[in-house]
Image 1 (cartoon, helix red, strand yellow):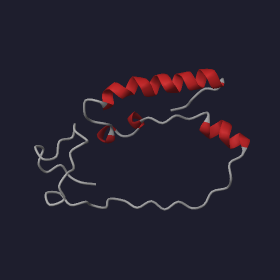
Image 2: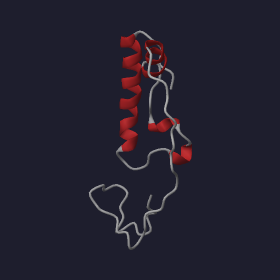
Image 3: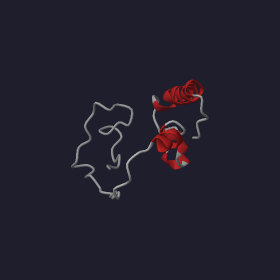
Image 4: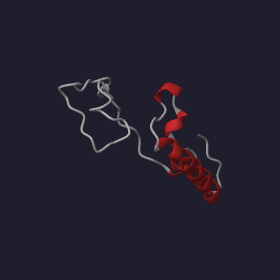
Length: 94
């Protein structure tokens, strides 16, 4: 990750601007190690793939999306989840 140390040189709202490493070096904050898991079965697909939904707003308030575009995406995540649950005929748990 990088800290936004100079908002003029590191705008949060403009993803086309590359943040200079001289002003804020990359910092490793975590490593993920995942053990192999058993192959998917039809029951697992029904329970997990079809019965769950992803949204950046499911996390802690401090980790929720910022910026002008992300709040506009929230209704799209909600409508997509509702549609998938209705069309697949199974309730979706967030």
